[in-house]
Structure formats: structure tokens, C-alpha cells
Length: 225
View (cartoon, rainbow, N blue to C red):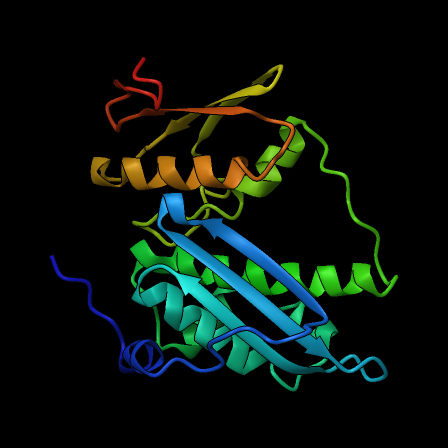
């Protein structure tokens, strides 16, 4: 089935705004991974007195939704104080685009996270924040998994109660996911999103995701077990 996009999504895909990279940017950040299909890099120029974002640009490696959400995120952020932009969320981006298919909601999450990561880097560069040391524990993993969107519903997998358990064993983490009422066709997408998200934790070397289908029968994990 072909994915239907709103006219605004198509406009931002065919004529994206603020594409490129700012020379001598005040901050930069990259979210996602080309290996998993989507990646965004944002660069910023921020007024040192007013803390207003004077310029913001992006480079994309991904699909139409990836490009469109990044384009809209930069349009909304330019000219705004960083404190206001820090309150952006995926729903705001999606609504401004006239809606996104549930299977593409993760793109708006990626755009917002990338933009906020660039702001965070600007704050660190200017002594307004300290670089956070990522704690290698279940609490941190659950926090990160709130960014993983169920393609069928557009909601995050934590709020839907899809995580059965998380176990850390040295540099390896095991995560079991229960699809519940989610169609089996979305299993691989959810697995890929979880793997990409948790791989950002440098303290972990391997992520094993095991998914149970709607009848509670096991689907092979990403180690083929």
C-alpha cells in the first residue's frame, strides 16, 4: 500500500527549507544512522546575547518524511529563543506538516531530537550546561525507548507497555518486546528503531532485541536465536 502524504509534507520534501551546513557554526549535532535508514545533522548560529537562533540548517540521509520533518523543524526554530525550541516535540512538527503516517512518526522524533541535541551542544560550548555522562542502566534505556514510536499507533513503545523486560549483562543488553495488538508486519521496524536508539549508548557493545508476536509466540531475535 502506497504511503499517503499531506500536501505540506510533499512541499517540504520537494522544496526543503534551510538545507546545507552553516560555516563556522556555533554548534552541530547528528542523530540517527545511515545503516538504519535515517540520519540528520543540524548546525546552528545563536545570538550570544538574546539566545535567539539566527540560523539553522540541516543535512539529511533518509526518506521524504525525514527531509520534510527536518525542513519544518528548522522553519519553526529559526528566529526563536533556544528555550522555546527546547519545548518542541514530535507532535508539533507532525501537526505543522498536516499530519504524518504512523509509520513515519519516528522521523519527527528524529528531527526534534537532532535539533535539541544541537541546542544542547551550544549550551555546553557556552558553559550553560554540562555534558551529561550516560548512566548504563535500565532507567536510562527506558528513557531512550520513549523515543521509539510504534508505526501502527504513532505512540511510543514505553507508554504502550510493550517492553516485557530489559537485562544488561556486561556490555550486552537484552530487550524483550511484546507486540500485543500491533500487527506482525511492524516487528522489524520496531526492532530496528530500538537497536538504533540503544546503540547510542557507548557503554554497550551489543543490543539483542527479542520480539513476541500477538499470540505470544516468539519471533527470532536479531541474533537469529
